[in-house]
Length: 269
Image (cartoon, rainbow, N blue to C red; front, side, top):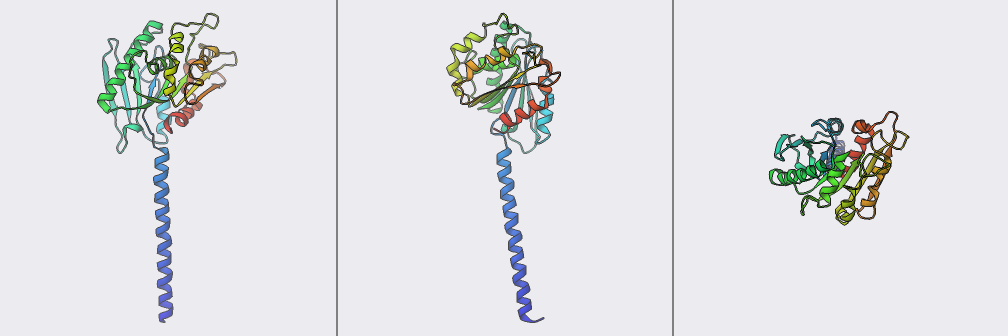
């Protein structure tokens, strides 16, 4: 083989290897960047409302796990306010990837019990600080769970709550469930302490609507009363209504759109 041809082949081979190497390096950098973008910056802690079960958030967890498998931590607050802990780990994941469900065995629908549950939440959060070194979190509150989170952030159960970055509320009855006789017992203390909500980076307040001004349980006016608490206090406040045929308060957590909202506003933030 002539030397010129041989050296030409060597030059072409070297150039090809260089191109492949640059391509692999670019892909690796892209993969790393993608991982950083999709990785959670903090765990997500979820609380349901009255007459809840440990499985209220199973559909949301399943939807979130469809794209990225998360470790799941279940914290149970017993009727006498003791803490039970269960953890399902996932290899090569961090606490920030975790989905944490706090379940109250006594979730009776009374104002007095919501106060008790808020105290239980404070104990659960203090436990998580010690057990898994929790420093901050995003939060999701469904129905009365939204009231419990709001009371906790407002410092009504502890003077040093764990910092909550982003908060989503779904079907939260800030003024109860009777539009003609709004219940201010839990709402007014929040109004007096609304300055505490300045610590929140973003709040998303979601209501369900059957097109009759309620979700068959909670009036829209009760949910939207959250605007007076968070608007112009939290860094960003977004209020939205989910209007789907046959929607009801009881199935809000099963709506696929709600799962997408959770991913967009709480998991990818």
